[in-house]
Length: 248
Ligand code: PEP
Image (cartoon, rainbow, N blue to C red; front, side):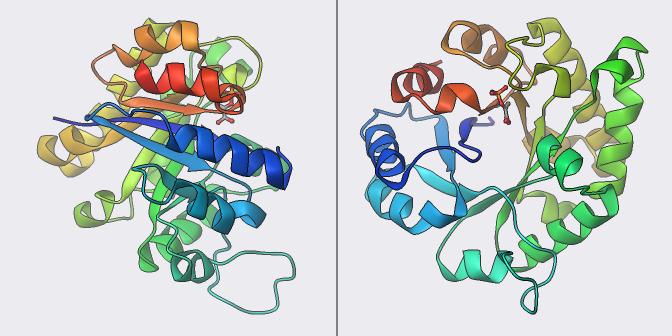
């Protein structure tokens, strides 16, 4: 039985005091037994958020890491730095990183290898832009992202991967995929995993939905059989909204 995962992605938001306040509030939430809560926080606050949630089951994720372990890469953060801090998760391949920072599938494959090599768990994002969805090529588009970014891994490495399906047209737009659209793509992704790795591995993998998840649509989305929770942007910035999503 797969657990449900409620992962927040704070993106580039919050002052230091606000970040600590939000993390402290989330740490105070009564989390259902079968649910894992992860906060994707700005790198500058990782340590403080880690302290704020210590003693609670809440986990902490970085939002990115570099493909190399160290060196002359001013401003960058390495997977070895994250693991040396005891950070458990890193989000890779978010569509904003793919679009604004030109992160290619090949680069993301490299980042994924580096992160896994440092013992991090990877929340690997995929998802199609609106024209691709309108042309009904979304399944092939996501398949390519997964083949190029993840499918070089062996099945034991996949234990440390969470896939987040985030249709770009639904991110931060207020437009949410319908529960049928989410289930259709999650089922397709699980079928791709089954074809490549077999049913046992595919059945254990967590596939999250992301894109304008809110308290009022979380239950129906998470109720779909192949939707194992959500990666939540805007609604993770307010403790009451995120708590409602955790309970959903
Ligand atoms: C995200 O950034 O991963 C996301 C899904 O954002 P939002 O929930 O705001 O659409």
